[in-house]
Length: 106
Length: 119
Image 1 (cartoon, chains in turn orange, purple):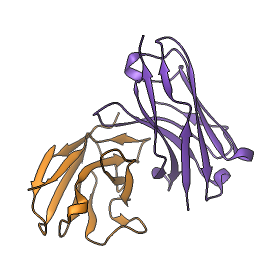
Image 2 (tube, rainbow over the protein chains, first blue to last red):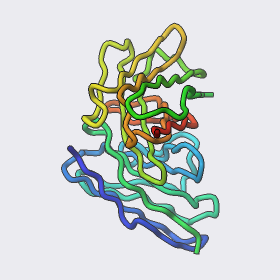
Image 3 (cartoon, helix red, strand yellow):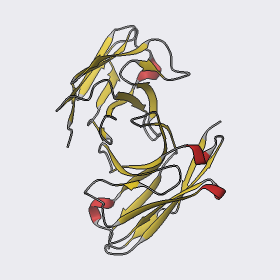
Image 4 (spheres, rainbow over the protein chains, first blue to last red):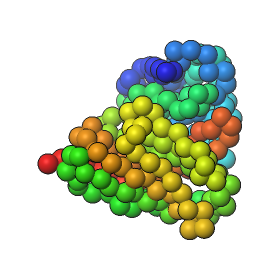
């Protein structure tokens, strides 16, 4: 089974900061990595799929990069509404989620 | 607008059964693989089941294989999850999700339904 490791588990940042979240796969998953945003009490929302494709309607301050085993989600300028937990998902071989990174405002 | 609305959750005793439903609208249901994903309280997300467009192929992780059955009714644009021999560790919010791409990821999710397994 493919394991997904996200880091950090918690992140505190200020409005306007550039924020980078990491996700590592235990084996090669090519480009098949998605990122989700989950706000408290809500369902997850798809941000990025295939590592770097922005889902329709998602602000351009969100971007994804990486391939193979190492992936990154970047928020170019953090906004208050970005406070949430962010999960990665490998979709190369069935689906495995990372444990999440909780993003808070400093 | 894509909408997925789950129902059927609740409190159930260990060893008993429960069936979840998901009503889909806003897209051609029969064209998409569908999935169930769950999230235990204050925990991460876990894939539970996936079903092909016709319903002829189903897929499960080992944690639920043999106990859970995913099915669909394309005429009713509905997805189901039959859960048998429930355990306390099955306690979670269960989300219905549309599968997109190949290999697939979940692009739209319902709001979720809570299942509590407890005596």
